[in-house]
Length: 167
Image 1: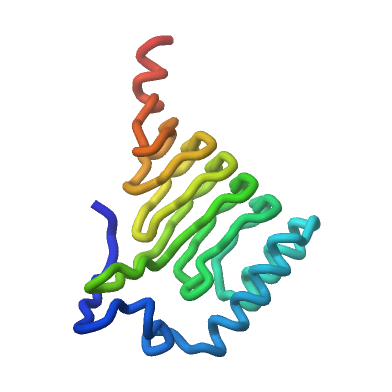
Image 2: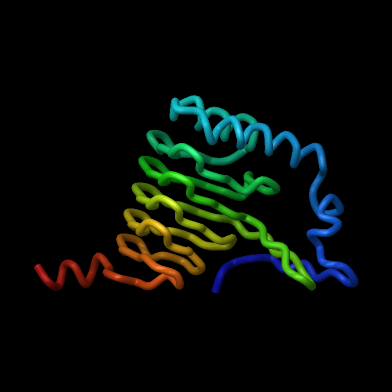
């Protein structure tokens, strides 16, 4: 189960009146910074923008590829460990708006994680140290340290323990 906080709403869906849940000016600032970051080819500048303007935690030597889309409303809930690679066009969400509620949750990507291109990471998940996420995966639950996962829905393909048993 993902670790999210649920906020029920009555009447109209929460996306219709999203600026009751987050400031318009915060979203505008985040939008501008995220769009600039998506096209910035220098990883150190990109990480600086994430840390400085979005209040994200990004570990040393982590590389976020071109076109990665961070959560536009709550990027401060995203934490990326040291020496990670986040692949091209990945989306990392810390919120989700549904019909009768919205949910917020931290995304924690621990050290030395590889996330393949075009992956979607949903709110409230932790990707464990040394894990590998195959391209195109929808990460809808926690990934154990050292695991190799892939698919939609995400499946555990191999764990570090199962790999050691084979050897």
